[in-house]
Image (cartoon, rainbow, N blue to C red; front, top):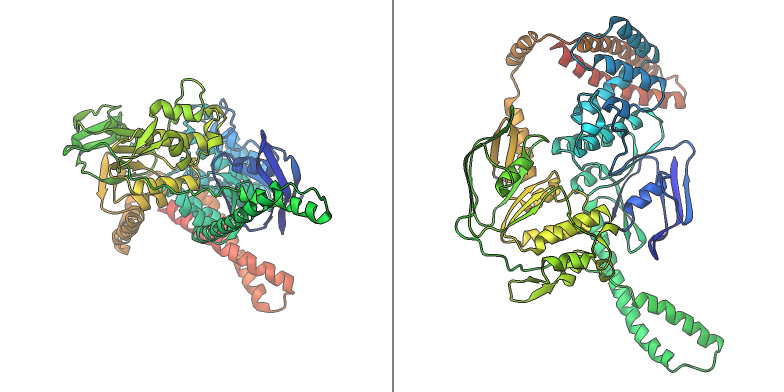
Length: 622
């Protein structure tokens, strides 16, 4: 089914167009990643597709049966309303029934019997139990609990997860034909959540258009890449590696074409300067052609590469030592007797689920928080560069170039030469015209890029990077990786971007919770492989498993779990009956082709549902 057609789309801010005369199509089942430099129109294009902004020229056609659902970078919630009210804000009978049931059972206290009986009857009447189990899966995997809590009391990361849950619940419920648009869906998710989201989007029959900086996520989920570059749109089928190869080939071709145009331009310019008096048809045609050649010759091919041999402040023998460090917040232990001595050139990745203390650990290294006990000794020659999640802090509005020059006029290189502030900005994809833009006019991603640049321009010898990849575009990430790979100082990185971590770190601090930190020698992918191997080793033998089941039986089931177990038994019985009927129909050989096709699809769905419900039944039974 054809979902979207975009023809001749144009949109500008000020004089310069973000994109001009672009066209593309989206078919059912497409999973497309949109790639572009920050500030070149990615988010604007997404908003046009979902009707939140209007195009200047061109046409956007969306099939009448298609619903567009969008996850934006910043979510709009009613801060006074609860998590539950914000997620289920549609006025629909099934959603209302689930909201009422969840509200009554979202605590350990015994609910009002009359109200609960009415809620259960409504769920039965609307056959809402299957959808309710899907809602539980989404909320559980995204670590969203306490559904009565006002959204205004949540952190930015928690609100982003609530917004993601709302979108996933909407697409699972609303319509059969949905175009899901997602702007940086992996921000504020830990790696476990990202891996779950990959599998979820891969299994769901969803048509997807997304912007993401997470290249492993992109590769896992998407089968097509669209790139906005210089106001034009380029489409590449296949994975990220194929995109990089095809893009490099395109740029080489454009470079050769531009050089050819420049040579022709020089010849034609010489002819034009003679100012021919005879305005023959032939002369006019040549004059018209001259201006076309001039436009091609003027095209600038920007090399998005960074090769800086940095003259770094010398690191002494003593860098940073942590001895028997303890840190906790109330009952939450962050570190329990942590020992480590940093060595020159170390590249350490810090990983672990959200809320185990990764950012607190960075603050301890930087000295912005104090340990409860133990010693943290910082060497005299250490110059920290701290890239935090708080972002850019500018006292007054100023131009980009002024902000960087206030730090320093030049950046020193190892060979004794210097790079000017303007040159350094250009290397980080701020062209001359952008350098005189006021910071307030930059996009969110451009501000993050300028913040990162300002940290590096101070020439530190110990970099502490807290989620440096959030909101950065892929070209900037490539530049940052190239810079960090040649960087001679120490680096500590907290990041959920597995590709970025794999490329840069040589060992990990794994925060496992309850103050336990594992020092793992390897990158993130190697750690995940080791973790899977450990899970296989620890898998209990049948006898041991039976014993653990017997031990678990001592825990009292909640009312909600009892009700769910009863409903699962009914669902499984119904599904097994349906499977038996479908088996008989398929075996009969008398079904018409269209019914045979439907039965084949349905039996696959039934088998999958039986597996899911059977696993959940086993969990609750134990």
